[in-house]
Image (cartoon, rainbow over all chains, first blue to last red; front, top):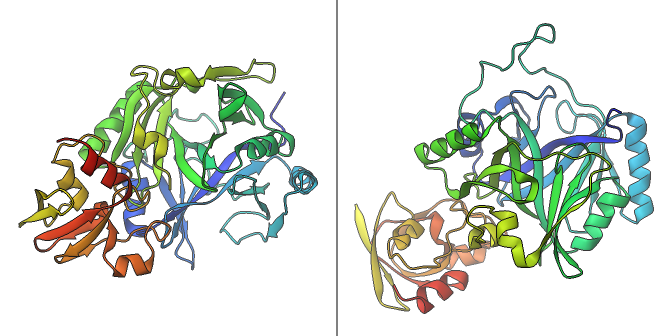
Length: 306
Length: 103
């Protein structure tokens, strides 16, 4: 069966302190492609293998962090159905008119219980991935740096973890794929709306609305190592890696954009089906769950958010 | 050009080039636990207070440093570039690392 309802993370709008430094980082270092700018100074980017016009919006701001994350739903009927689900959960919604972001259809916007803003939309202008749809080539020649394939997921820290996870499961129809638990208390939840190991993840935290990282897919472990080379060559602040996660099995490296927003590039993670069991890691083994090789938690990785 | 930075709490000094941010200089002290976070002015873990000296700054997230704090010399070490010798105090997480860990 094809995917229904919410299809995927569609875009993330990140606040940046210096727009030129941010564009250099995301385009020259990571390989995203600039597709538009607007009169608010926002810059629209996509990864090479994405067809829709943008998956990252960089917003000039005096603070760092995430403005919102948006999911694409399959049809307009789905959009109104989820709007109703969200309201029925007790979360207020607003509608944002089409073209408030260039090329994006009407959005349903709301703040989830952990203090993060999410938008849903059904339509976005398609600009293609630079490869013909008939007899396509396997990859685009027009990409540089880490050659990120797609915007994949975010990990968010919020102050009402249990309600935010319940909201995603009950109102937005995500499924729990993996979790970290301390006795009865859930520390981390990895949630999927697809066959991916996660489309979004949440970690229990004291402050509302924080971004831990925005993540982008690469093609292989070799590409992750190449990203590590670029991080050193370009003097990008490294956080952790390259290594493997126990959670989701992904091969990964973490670093920061010039405004202190953490990025991940990763490859070769796990997958799930609706009948897959939930995988559980126990808090006493959280070192291995997070960094499978060193089995040691890293203070900056656990505590630093934007 | 290189300047001498003094942490007044411990009387320790380190040298820092004008092109290098204070956190990069401080990392050369080799102390365990100096909270190196995002190094982009976004996460707020490397808070310091400048007592005297001249410097240039890059933008810091207003969520972490208010305008009043910035005007009073309370800054993030990763966004401060020295233009003279500087005396500073370390705050918050950074204070814990600098003042409790032996070099």
